[in-house]
Length: 294
Image 1: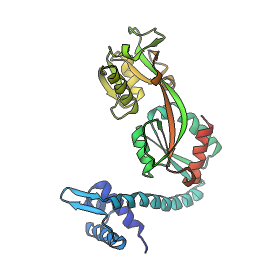
Image 2: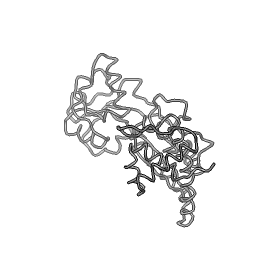
Image 3: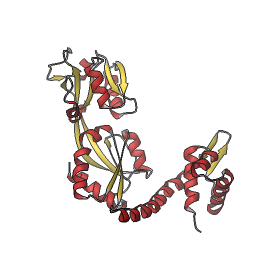
């Protein structure tokens, strides 16, 4: 039995887009042709892959399994084309990396610089996401390597230690907490916060620690990144918490940092892969470099 790569790609697209029409438009194929290919795929495998209803299309359990397998197969086919293109263009291989904002701002700039100096012919395709999304991307074969703040995970990825970062409080000049060497988290809850968006692991951690104290965060503003957070804090719109090393980037702002007198202010960072021994050569090179460049 031979499976057509296009039919596998169409299966993925239909589930991602929710309708045959949307998948057909994405691939510039008639909707009837897409429907026929999917029916033929189900017939070849003697398995129902899709549930069709007036609300759209969803994959069955078998469909999701095939999608995960297909992503790996299609990635390998894409790698053949890319590697041949890379040889023609003078590059040799690529690696897909997803990391959270803490890792992106603190560790990856130096790691990427030294990696490219050592392996100038390897491309690193880097994307920023929240920690929970990173784990899913690696588990679903969307990314080769994920680097994130440690969160609970399933058995479908391999996890390795990467490092530790330290959270600190930032306050504007003249704030009542300015000038302190350390401060307990409970004392900060009396003030308005400039926080990160609700999907971030840092937001979840702060909310959880506040809940343990029987308190809640006074979130005045939520932002997407540390740069906006620092600017809002400098403007006096609240206080904030961010990794200490990330604050170096914003050294020109009128901010003061205060260490948090909390054990959870030291967070473990991790690297995850589906299986190290199954990584493409370029991904193994980058993984090994990250482990050695900590």
